Image (tube, rainbow, N blue to C red; front, side, top):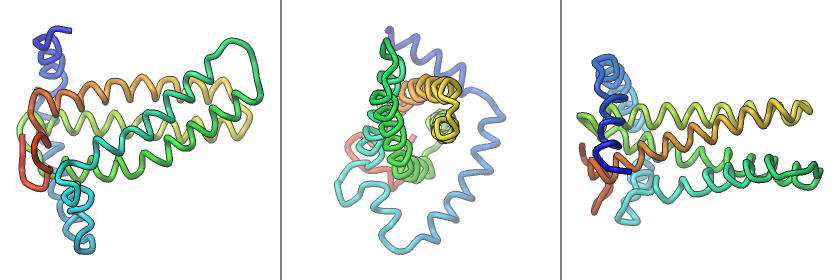
Amino acid sequence: MDSQINDRFEDTLSQHDRLEALADTLQPKLREWLDALPDGVEATLHGQPLGHPLHPILIHLPLGGWIVAGLLDFLPGHSPENEAAADRALLLGTVGSVAAIAAGWTDWANTRGEARRTGLIHGAVNEAAFVLNVASLLARRRHKRRLGKLLSGTALGLAGLGGFLGGQLVYRHGLGVGQTLAHPQG
């Protein structure tokens, strides 16, 4: 896809005063929470011990689990083994997303400008995917498999949108390129 199309799509989503106002409200609250963490936790969430951001590494587990669950959910035929495997993959991806979420919001705390607004949408979309996957797991436990599949399928679509926006943050705005996000960027 032409990068200009990508950029126009991102601009359409992120160029809103309400997003800026929301970011102005949320970012200082997040900074307070991060400042209250024990020494070294924030640096670890930024990936400083690695020398590059931790968040991009951590997203592979949730995305992998969610994609595998989606593939198993929609394979032709009905198999109790595939259903059980899909449920386990979905659970693994959803539990694994907690660390990715923590690292992502930690990095977002140091963004500014359009990258901050895009990052806010990126985080919110991925949080929605997380919540839908938790709801899917609950529906599956209650033997409402069709609802569970609908919820996790929708979540996978949202995660795709979130991934697109994450790519914009890195490739358009340069967030985390060559450094961790321990210092303001964007």
